Image (tube, rainbow, N blue to C red; front, side):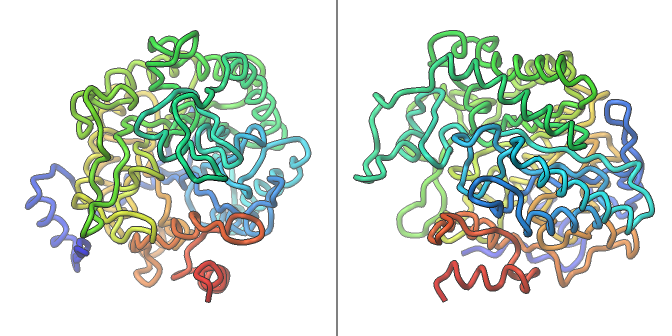
Length: 472
């Protein structure tokens, strides 16, 4: 296995960047990251965003539990002024795992406690939460729903991986039924109900989730689906458009955001012999991947994503969080890593190329919509140098917020560390060794899902869980 992150100084990283021919900037002056950002008329206190990080640690009926409260308390005390709450199912059958949160009236008190604990911790640490913006992600997992796949379109590249008969372990053929148009139409009411509840308990925004090949993202690529939800771009965006419009009409005080894939890519397999990732067998053109050149899956095509983001902004979306890839099928695209999880492939590219892809596509979107705050991703692999990369991007107006995911589990107070010391605590920096992902993929306990976190740097809580997951 190659060892990529070998940088002792920022100069070492800059030299590697030049060697790879990448146009990435790094700025030692972190001032731009501590400037306020306007989001729909709300003044957010700095340019740091805690990305939606699922803990897979709710109760089996979807209520927030003690580890959930602990995580948001730590995020609140950490210093980021934009906290993007994790995926919460809008109905039970659309949850991705048996411990994913479910946003229903029965769990309203738990979701309120998540928020109260988060804001209280922020006030305790910083004196005021007047510039703290907290939201929650509304989700339907589609083909990745854990009870059974709820597919919007047949995808010849993903179907063999996701539509499997649990009894025989065999792939189900293309006769597997897709969700009906009426099912999709009725989802609007579920999203609106969840949005109303989120607003009632105090969340300031909801994210209509359209990323990582979950249901709304899959519909974006549903060119082969017949009827009102497939084929043309207008049809493929119909459900998300109806959801956004309905929330805007029925919950006017709530900000609307979206985390959206810009580039789906295609699934990867382990290459025989060395387990390096390689594209799965496919034929051209690939017509089942959003934001992807149908004649070259390695090449993003942002024409449709730009058109759709522009329309969403006109519909009233105030905040756009851009992502890419599929955590189950192309994890090197969504989150460049040093070490894969046990069931994963080794990265087929230098992780810095993946970081650069995130930055390049994010810059394209931010410059297309300069008045809309855009959140970028791909920073965690940079470890102690992520602030310098973020500062350069914000200063150049390539992005509005620096989104940090895995690294927040290892060091939830990373913003406070930067504010007080000008650097991250090197003893608690995420090394992208994929412990959190390995826990997320572990299902062999009574609840059908292990809670996920950072075993190396949050040992008291997640060390024992890690040992149990490994069978020690």
